[in-house]
Image (cartoon, rainbow, N blue to C red):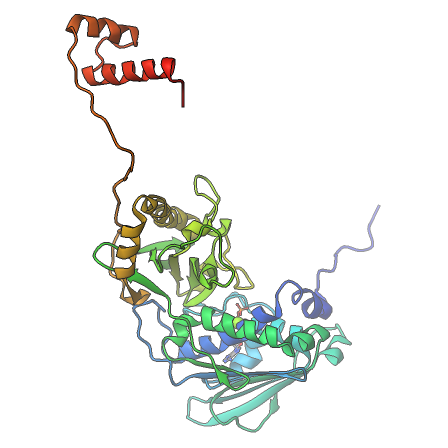
Length: 453
Ligand SMILES: Nc1ncnc2c1ncn2[C@@H]1O[C@H](COP(=O)(O)OP(=O)(O)OP(=O)(O)O)[C@@H](O)[C@H]1O
Ligand SMILES: [Mg+2]
């Protein structure tokens, strides 16, 4: 028997990219993807170097402005723009070319973020870029995309036209989207969505905003969070830097952890308290916070011998920073909103993270023995930015003596040594100390006459 068809088609459809890859990402994460691209461009202009905490690169010349309304979404940056070659060869393809140079300490890795974001936002897209050619000429072009028209025909090649365009005021990229999808329209016109977006940007880009980067949303500049830990003679955060490797790619890992605030007064969480939103573990990949204030099993809580997060542990902040020239070596999910827990570098880091958390857990338990003294000492510790925490293998926290308010009685009497040994033998150990025989005989008599408590 012969078969008539000898190949099975595996070619994707355009609808797959427009409808499917946009499904599992939130609109907020799409906006972050576009911000990431602007930052990657700024960072490459600054020489693509490791974005370590100690790095003082000044980003104050770079601006990213976002306008969001029920009519349209626009993001504009002055981060240098994308070149015509980049646009023609890879910026608009789905997935990065395996041969593309990946050594940029970027957050971009998969080659999908921009396309996924604009498709999620709406149907009428225009990407504009103004950049300097090597001869110093400022060149401008645009890539307009009418999604519905593009979807009409599935035949390859799947190109978008590049057209001439007016120059933008500064070298950079502007992406505008109109004909918003129903869900984008409702999100972008919601004050609550915009408020959340503002907060997320302030938090997830705090390390860039600290370096001077400016991001605005609907005309309002966003100021970044300052992540700080408290320090004094007795309270010293830990800070450790080590190197690891994934398939030949080097990854630097830095862990910092300690007390960010005194543990809470109340046993039950107070809704009005901001605290819960701040504490826990932060995971940073090439400068971008991908997981913030995490209290879940991702950062180890409730796994193995590690307890579940409990409100008692509030006050703790741990930060783990992964830095790699090749972003593919980072423990990132494709949405950049969490950690790939199957990543080997992340798994190897977890026991170190656990050690820091464990010491804090023990501290919050034993401070109860001398609460007033603990509170006094905690209040004396001053907040310092994480970048200025000194290197220390483990966190330093004070210990407190157990205090008991019960009045104690001391018993002293003499008996025949021979009788004592006989009694010790009856208690199961002829070599028992005099003291223990005394204590045991008291307990024995107490249980018999008074009863077990
Ligand atoms: N604002 C921008 N400025 C300069 N270049 C940009 C900008 N936005 C996108 N690009 C170019 O377009 C490319 C594709 O972006 P896209 O977000 O789709 O993928 P990526 O950033 O490479 O990877 P990821 O999917 O992980 O985000 C980028 O690699 C970059 O070269
Ligand atoms: Mg990207």
